Image (cartoon, rainbow, N blue to C red; front, side, top):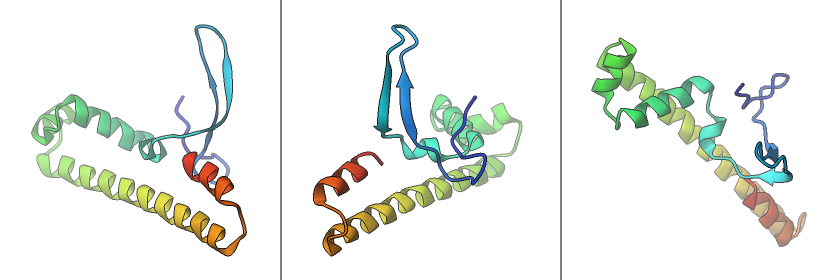
Length: 117
């Protein structure tokens, strides 16, 4: 099951626990996740197909059974969403840095927050 969005409020979820299926060790904390993980499952599957088809939109259109313009349009939507996600992260980083400048939080705390984005 893929869950990248809170089913209650639809905000992005944070990864706080990782487990090894081999040795059963668990790690808890704040873990970095790629902005790609914030994308919908549909967008992530599209990116997987894009990579597996070596970026050939023509090949993707054949595999998906749609026209080239349809694939191009979907790619544009994925790109726009990814840009939005990256902008949101940058905006949040700027808010944290502003809090440091105002003295609301320490530089060390800001570094920890930004490191875990």
